[in-house]
Image 1: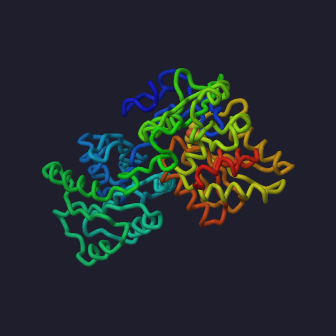
Image 2: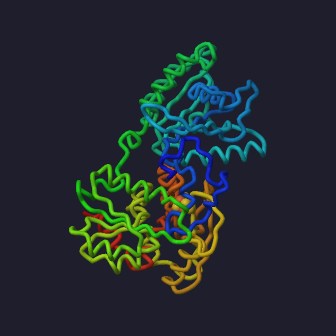
Image 3: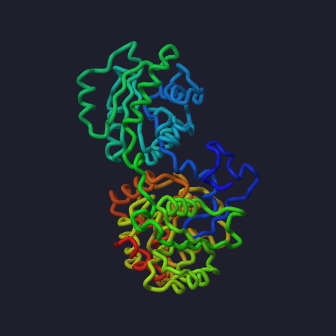
Length: 436
Ligand code: SF4
């Protein structure tokens, strides 16, 4: 079973005793077999102060007791996530957060955890008890507006108080506030609440989610032949290929292309025997150097991770970031950010291969710091460059939030594939297919 047809709540392969923690691909490690399905879901975060009714809302939306509902403020201590099919939107993950106004030192840690969710939230639901709108709720609106994240405001407990009319019209004027719902989340009116909130979520869904951009649909025509180079080495996942490659194949089929998938060792044979010139060759970035020697100069070539730099992030921002490699000097500090946590082994891409490529290019040693998963430093001032992994395990919003965070602090950011292409002198060639 590949990751595309994993059941929604599939057990992680690790939990099945299958070792998938073997990063090895230049840009996407084999960990991308693990429930990457979540990275393809619309992330809907539920935010608000303690006891505003966030957990009641999640239970209402999922029609299950996913979160503990209690009159005691702060019952939800860690984010609770629930994946489901939310038709007609499709696969979503609802995230019920701890109250962002949590108190005490433990509360501070919960707040930090909740704030990290801001980065990956693609649709924010702000729950407030009607009549209890303060600077705190307003700060949530401001935070998500700054991130261009659509917002649904749910005024709960409207049986007790009505939201201030002046406040409602002020919120209606905020561009990112797409819907305002007035309801009372109690069992007696659950069905009505569900219908209203559901309609609001559907109406507020981000445009990009509804019309998901194609991975390479703008670069190909029907019947074009596209060759994908997928190394199957000792570190390749058993019986599978990784999600970015699966997604690329699917995208080519969606665009009525002829997709030829070969290992590095069969590329020359395939190129020599194709009756038509390939429209494009896409390779694992780790094989950039050898593949570029086999693919004729007049055949466009790029890497999966360069494709995904555009699909999951911002091609231009990452390309600009890669160019700053030229300005690096020995002793400079670089942050390497990976979206999943895996135990590095052998020639780990983030810890060994990329640092070595940069050292060679710069001609001296540099300082490399690493962060994994949701960790990403607030203060980036120590860094000359941030290098992000292929981000197959997270959603686009997270990567865009990080790019924005870097831009605000004037720190360039790029990704693994761009870095490899730049250091190998293949940068222009890898980007050329996107320039037409
Ligand atoms: S999220 Fe990043 S580090 Fe993890 S498997 Fe994907 S590309 Fe590799």
